[in-house]
Image (cartoon, rainbow, N blue to C red; front, side, top):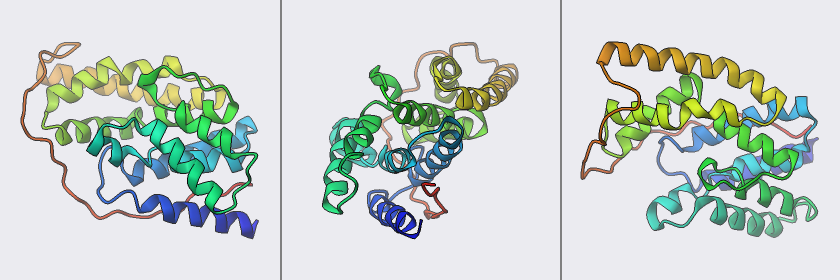
Length: 224
């Protein structure tokens, strides 16, 4: 148990070095997804020594994608494989970890083939739903120079469709609650602003900035 804790601390310390700014896909998102993976994984009987590293590394290449355009799921899998081998992590689990990272992304259409990959994909979707999903939608709109209309469009075009894509029973129970909250918010926002569903034309802006914020490290799940 102590060795497993030390391994996860080592992985987290490495992952943290890639996140120098907060944002919709910052370190706080990674840690929430990791906690959701533990919650779901314990119910579903997942291999935590696959699932937790995959969760920690799933967005490690997001900052690189923003800089260079490299698909973060592919680059993240490559970084994870290389690093895990360098520290002598269980070689038999590394390919499954990499597969989970490669297939977690909603927009690629890649199919998660293992239980751990399905749970990671579900957890990533869950963090785009509910109260956190609403907060991230507006945060992301601001990062891209947009406003309320952009966030509203994102909610209707993507977030309200996520509950139908959840694949594990434990995640589905969480998704039901979060989807209901998201729908109530979307309805209230349209009532108060007069926006329709979907929203109007995109807001054009030359700005593409986000404000650096102090990152807060929180505890991470431990394989059991």
